[in-house]
Length: 226
Image (cartoon, rainbow, N blue to C red; front, side, top):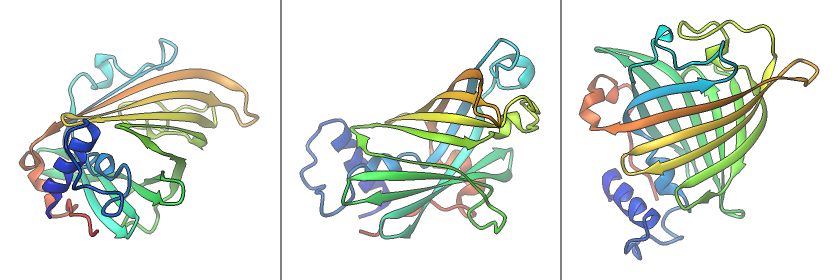
């Protein structure tokens, strides 16, 4: 069975269609959702905080989607790597990567979010969180997480020194046409005082894989080994 067939079966399970051939013994619960996070996408980033540090204004060049490829690779039986890479014309730049690990005893998944490429020895764990997939939705309170790139001198963001870290909560919702990451964050000082609240909405609109052709060989999208 190839990757596309597995994805199709996973989506049938999500949507409540006939999917009796996809049993708990063949694939982990929620596997179709994790696989469906991979592929080629037009991505929009929107964050609102206080009217000064909001990231959806035209001057931050976020009015147009960013083309992003997310590769998919099985690391071990119940662990999978999703490598994010941004594309500008034919230029490919590795962004960050996630490692998703399934826990059969609890039917839950741990998402680890790392800086840089998974091939980079200097990569750093930014945050991790464990929760089950409920249909096509995954909600997890990661707690204290590293300050994000958008507030650490990113060209489209800010160089913030007024807070130390995030108290981060993520919700993922996956559909056949893509997926959305919703963030509800508290920005904390070194003494854990709340400096501000932030809401984020990141939309991944699915494209055909050929729209990210320049990234396909470097960060492949592999099939699951059952």
